[in-house]
Image (cartoon, rainbow, N blue to C red; front, top):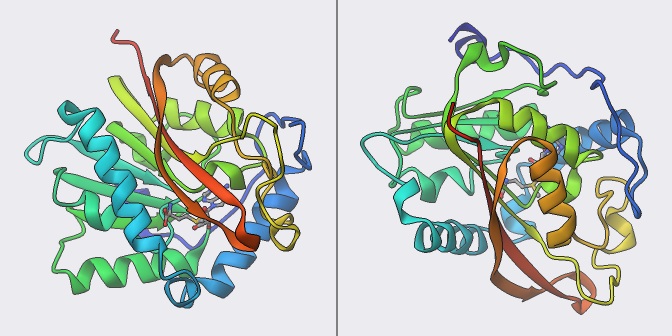
Length: 252
Ligand SMILES: C[S@@+](CC[C@H](N)C(=O)[O-])C[C@H]1O[C@@H](n2cnc3c(N)ncnc32)[C@H](O)[C@@H]1O
């Protein structure tokens, strides 16, 4: 796995297709660059800025395990933690899977993730991250395929959830599952993300079940379902509901 082992410094490139969302800016390069800059600058302070994130993350991993227990086998399951950040999903997940590869666009986040994995005593085979922007092309991550791909608190940051979902589906083994946890759009479609974050968040109204299901099915995944997993008061006192959702790559 040379690409993974080499831990190349983060490179970005233009995806094949962009998407226009009802509330999105539709500019992949601009949004990806803004995310990289923001998380590079804030990775070392995120836990101080958002002390609730660690517990929220564990809660959402637990909700996935409760809902789909067969997906988590400590002896066998290989996991990709996409948009892994500093490792708030990988840490709780590590007890329930054989190995985890984290991927993120922010090099500072990836460096912090790997430092924490080493502090926890994990070998790189058990848990390590790489900074790379996936393009959905054959051979990415040195051709590795995973039993589960998990992506938490990040879909609302992607300019094109369709493009990202196709890239993630390509990294699943046949029969593998894509697990997403993110902000649920409310019935009145009100804005949920404060204006201060609109440069890094194109999906400011959250993501609806209808939208995510169409995205998963457009990427060739069978829709399993979406459930509420947690709720909390976000910035500006706005109540935010977090969903967990699963899609399955058909067996060959
Ligand atoms: C709110 S953080 C969530 C991090 C982690 N999943 C968690 O639950 O703590 C969003 C993450 O998405 C990453 N990100 C944003 N756009 C990305 C892209 N196009 N490719 C990979 N990572 C991206 C950011 O760098 C950041 O680490």
